Length: 204
Ligand code: SAH
Image 1: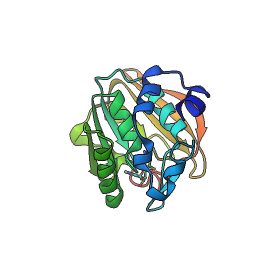
Image 2: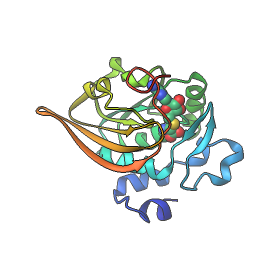
Image 3: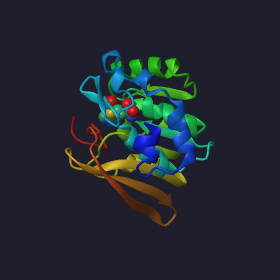
Image 4: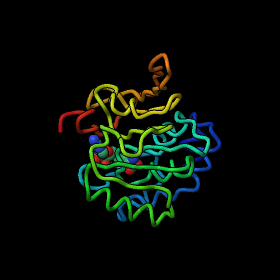
């Protein structure tokens, strides 16, 4: 997966490639889909949700440019896979999921994968996680109609937020850097994520 779908495309950050090599994706997919765990595809995980495509997980991690000492917020825990990869790259990871059953399953998956530095919360992650803010990096694995202001406000100065922005059906991954003079927005690749539902996202 790493050689073909990540290095073989345009992922070049060696820390990200090594992290993706270390996290066993098969732990995060349902048993009957395990043989497809290393395909470059999003796969169903129940409750109408999907585990993100490995390329998009790598792209998001690369855009965040983590050094290893950051506090990271992961919005849309899903299976917990992205959180596990972020845990390999940053110091402390808080992940938030709106569907309690998925959050519970993700906790089990993260334990099974040995990712002990991730805390999974249940709630509306489009509002961020004020009690643990500020964050050096925020990764959003669900699509928002516009920049969720609450998430931007919970970034440290120089902190980075990666979020798919656009319509429900297709988006572009945006990289937003918090600067004293205001937000710097860089556009990245076209993408297709499930909608972020809630206050800073689409209507549930
Ligand atoms: N990063 C996950 C991808 C899961 S798909 C993985 O690697 O498996 C996106 C997830 O975002 C879904 O589980 C969905 O329920 C969740 N989600 C959507 N809106 C949300 C919100 N406002 N707060 C928290 N989670 C949300």
